[in-house]
Length: 327
Image (cartoon, rainbow, N blue to C red; front, side, top):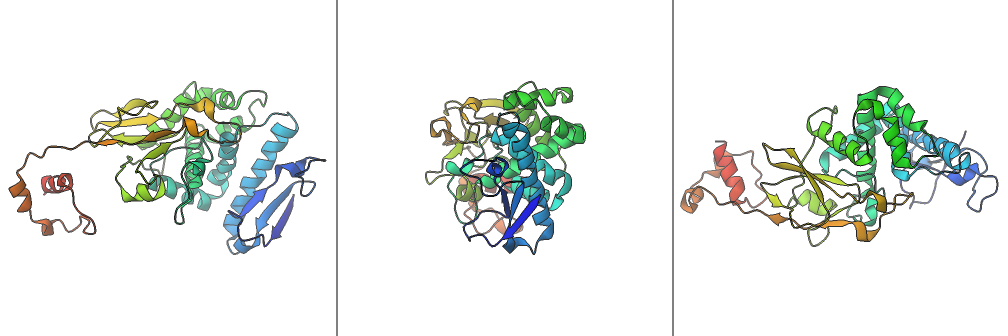
């Protein structure tokens, strides 16, 4: 291995990269012949992170060598990246913890359509590609907890002649988590919801939450759900029955929570690019609940007794009633 440490131009994203074309003898995009990893020198003050990125990129080179160079077959990007993310889950826990943090903050579960930032523009300091990285990392964490290192090794060593989805499905047959990628993804999210993935918590997608408006939604407050993307929503708050193309399944009947997803898996190409026509735009109908208490009773409600409620926002009728019920 050759580690080329250099002050790349300031526009580079991330800490390190690999160039798969370096593995070819004669290719127009070859930069250096051989197994090169490129490390951005500005990050050398964070050696643990740099080491983790080296592992991530090295796995990419292994993947290219095994699949594209030797077998003339490219593994689809979503599983390629998931295998590289597994190196952090196994060996670079600082990076893995960072992925978990983003995953826990944003209840949008998607890495099948890798370049989600093509439909969710970068705003402020948040790049939506982090959704893909965090989701794939947590997915591989789940695979590790379900089947151990052998399960990850089985995916990496799966038959390169197979289509990528078949490679995953065949590799995890013994784990009883599903017979299709769609079923496997549903099992993953259900286990997460039921607390079966350590250090991971679920959240529902609240379409009116400022956090998600700033990071995931467009200016019209619509949420673009990429093919293979999943969210959980509260049917007590929102009605999604008017959204065409969504698949829906009850996740928690007692609390009226639903799992919904974009089932257009076939529309994503090998490089993880999304066809804009296959994105499902969710503009939910907010359900207005009729309060059982009178308006005058609400106006007489003593807010000061609930100091832990946020004071930097206008409280809705529903929030006041909820707070009062907890009194």
